[in-house]
Amino acid sequence: MNQHADVYLFGQVLGTHSFLLKDGFLRPDEYSEIREQYFLPGGETGTAATVLDSLGVSVRMDGTWIGTEVAPMLKAFYADKKVDLSPLHFTESPGVMDYVVIAGLVRSPMGRFQTMFASGERWWSIPKEEDLAGCRAAAIDPFFREESLLAAALCERHGVPYVTIDCPHDSPLHRGAAVNVVSRECTGEHYAGLAPEEVMEKLTETSGGLTILTQGGGEMLYGRRGGTLRRMKPFDVEVRSTLGAGDTFKAGCVYGLLNGMGDEELVRFASACSGIAISRFPLPLNPPRPEEVGKLMSADRGNGQRRL
View (tube, helix red, strand yellow):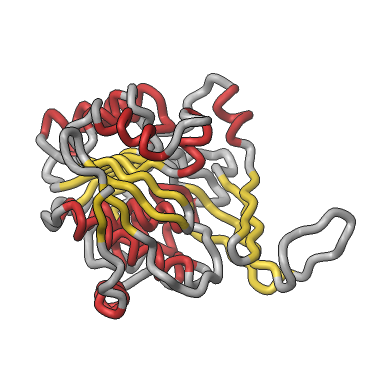
């Protein structure tokens, strides 16, 4: 086991089959040509681990049980990277996979997650205290019920700040997070009919951490309880694939937290990471590097904050 990991990650680690189409998105009863296809690590945590490694951060990763079809690919991919897989549990089932069809700004993921969650069976690990101890920051996906809450409790016990995603205002994960990144999909599910500013008011009043509301290609909102609500535009890049954009943003927030960035700097850094991610495909083979992030931020210094 890597005894000196900077960051602990807990959540979805998958094998992702991705298909980049040649001439636009799927249309009923029409043929579509595949331009590129890959089988690579995915999931919110798997992608974040790949990005953090590229940014020079060592990672210890746990979460989804890894099966026989995913394990060889996963082990080979991370063999030369600073990603410690030792906490992962390996099984004799094929493993958790998803399938994503992509055409520029549009993508459609497919899988069996609803069936898996509805089974009532646990197909993910229980976080272990010894895996978290010694890390300086963490990220926790909220999908794994009591185990996600346990990971947050362990972070609190050891004084490790954590980033989470898509947690509503009444979630214990949100209340304890150093950063909660909330997507448009989450607000559509939990806050239908509310304006973004109203959503942010609900979120910021129940947490002492930083809340970031992302809106796809629209302006992000971010702020803290009792502070000024701010906006920031995403970086202007040519989009090749949006797969992994949110996971890369999360990784950028973890990096910012690890390096003591202020709120504006952290949001800009995470946004630049995400901007680079959507400009290329496949992301796991081309994750953003620190010099690329710095170059994009320097080239677009006008992409700063403004108060509401």
